[in-house]
Amino acid sequence: MTSFVAELVGTALLIIFGGGVCAGVNLKKSFAQNSGWIVITMGWGLGVAIAAYAVGQFSGAHLNPALTLALAFNGDFPWADVPKYIVAQMLGAMIGAAIVYLHYLPHWKETDDPGVKLGVFATSPAVPSYFANLISEMIGTFVLVLGILAIGANKFADGLNPFIVGFLIVAIGLSLGGTTGYAINPARDLGPRIAHFLLPIPGKGSSNWSYAWVPVVGPILGGSFGGLFYKAIFLGKMTAAFWYVLIAIAAVLAFTFISQGKAPSSYDKPKNAFM
Image (tube, rainbow, N blue to C red):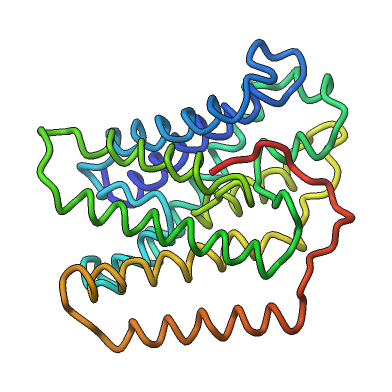
């Protein structure tokens, strides 16, 4: 298996588990309906672990453009391979979302709320505010990348690392996911959002494109800085990129605060759309 196919398959598996648990908990007439936040965070965490077990030996199981960029900034991954990985992750996320749609095919008509349907595919904030939502996504992805690098620096029994990373995802969801649904992965949100836009989902409503940039820009900036922070503080290897990314974060936050401030509230807000 090539690294491109591995990232595509791994990300598709991630979305099948993650989008699948969101669908099961939120769509009407599902046996799992209303089983709640804990179920969703566990579904996403175990989904990450299984996907990592499946393809880790072939590609390193990035499954996330923010992690791929963080590792490239860190010098642990070649920049020449970044576009290939991101394309594979995006395609995999779209395929995974389409499979979730097919799996729950009769449930879309049974569910009236278009926000609930969108929530199976994409994230949205509990309190709409571009500035605050962007900060939440940055922090969540910063913790994700820092946690993954810290886990990798420790010795576990053979094959245990992906399982521990899965619990990191659960921890982020439980502690930080209540604000924006913790996308912490541009492919996880944008790929399924595109699928939602393209698929013939009955009564699906808007794909909420006005918010779509937040779970892309936030994770990229937060994740990249997380990798550079680990390298500078934990390993004592400060680079110019650390300051460049920090300046970029400050500039984006300042621009968002000044020009936007608060996100529009007139959109279909997904419910329980975590990770």
